[in-house]
Image (cartoon, rainbow, N blue to C red; front, side, top):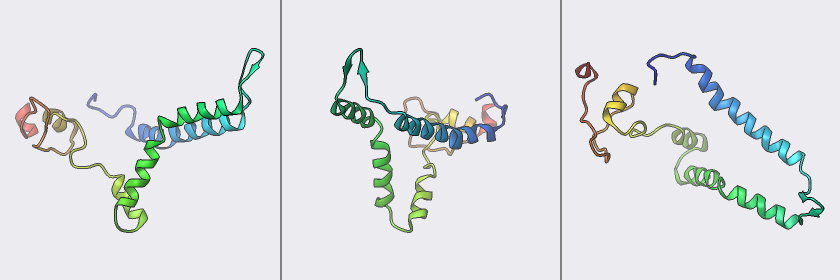
Length: 127
């Protein structure tokens, strides 16, 4: 966004790929290890209410792994190859407007459905 790589790009890749994932897994594990029956004053909630609460919380994120598994089994070939293909961005991934795609170095495409999208200009013509 700023036109330079400060702080280094490797830092953000490490944070988003590894550090964040480890922290989220650690939070999940420590939540399950430290689980206690829920209470409100003198009232102790039944186990069924706690289970329903966890199911409601999981309902917002459960589609992500379900769709990932579905997409892996939808493709043909060895399992590692299917996962590698699915982890690659598609040709239309990136900013919607052509001017922003050029600035970001993203692949350009001309089939944009975004109003006011610019045609495929060469970056030299923008200066």
